[in-house]
Length: 221
Image 1 (cartoon, rainbow, N blue to C red):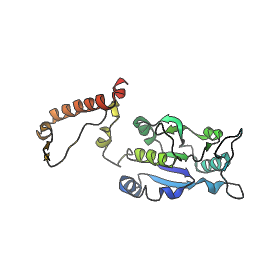
Image 2: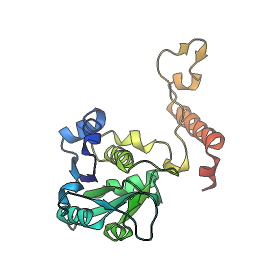
Image 3: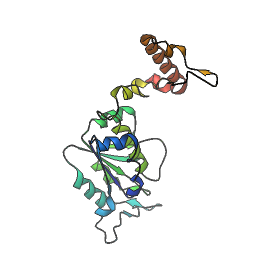
Image 4: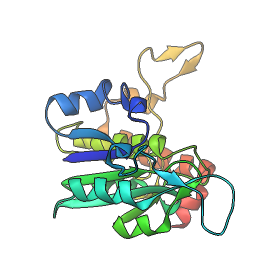
């Protein structure tokens, strides 16, 4: 997979993808990630990428030309273009799985007061990571990239993400490790029993209980 990220602040990405699982995925060529400053595509003499909104109002709005030219220079028949925006589709694990099957993703990070609405015509998806507003789409693009890359074949064990929270509309079951007793708190005995059938039943039951307590809305689905 290849992921191209369009941003005005490429320096924000200097360290985020150079650690842990994503770094390993890049090193092993499971994914290629490139950051593009779309200011470089501006035809304005001063490389301006924003302007005042028609009809008045506060703030500055990203203009079409630099983003259109940048996307069109990267896009192929295999590309899916994603706009990170607060009014987009709520991001879910199901969407992450869908996007992990694509060959090429282009992520557009908005900024300032917003973007010219005609930029939406470039996009296959408009995605929001939550009902709140960030200063820009950079953090959202990092969230998408991390959640997608870990699902690529060979990046982590498939069994690990099959049991993730939100699969089958359930939160993940609680997990424990050594020691079996810490400050008087004991690991559930069933996990020490070696009976894999009982352990599986216990984990499913605990997953349902946890979801009922913390996210009953998921069970309603």
